[in-house]
Figure 1 (cartoon, helix red, strand yellow):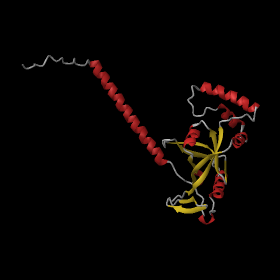
Figure 2: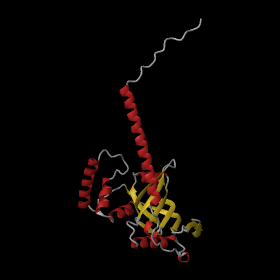
Figure 3: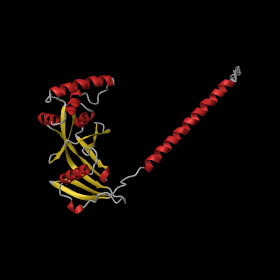
Figure 4: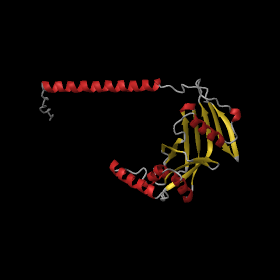
Length: 256
């Protein structure tokens, strides 16, 4: 016995107004796609039209480069400040979690001495948690007005509680208030919640300029490599890299 195909319903034809509605929706989608394409094109044109180092840049006399990168770094930061670079002590800090996933943020340099490059944060922040499981990091400084950047890489150690507290209490009232708010990197319920916590923290910071913040931690990056990059309008950039080997620094030039 052979089964016969049963009766198959044929869909009703779409009403005229539905067809018009579909046409309108298609037109709207096409318009949105066109706008997206135009926006993307305009964005690319913006990027390509931005000027880079459209000013006279300083020269980098390699003959004057010291044997240790620290004096040169201090000199370059000072010269960036004198050239009018805003906040030349800001830097990017790159860390990674236990799985190796990286994260990066901008923060301030607190010092640079024979021990290393100093910065601070809460132990419970994302950077603090990542440094606890993987105590290595990289720093990046960029001073556009002079076409210079410095890259620093190495291991990170934690300063003691007394030094960490001294670091915080040498800073501004606003810095102390921000530290007192705490909970950095945690999920925030609302801006109103932040406003209340901040107001209370400011009042305490003014009232107790030595108020303790146990989670505040000073970190010191001991450099293993420091690269100095001097931009050149002809793209003949100068890259001087310092590598620590044995008991001293080795200097080497890198192709740009």
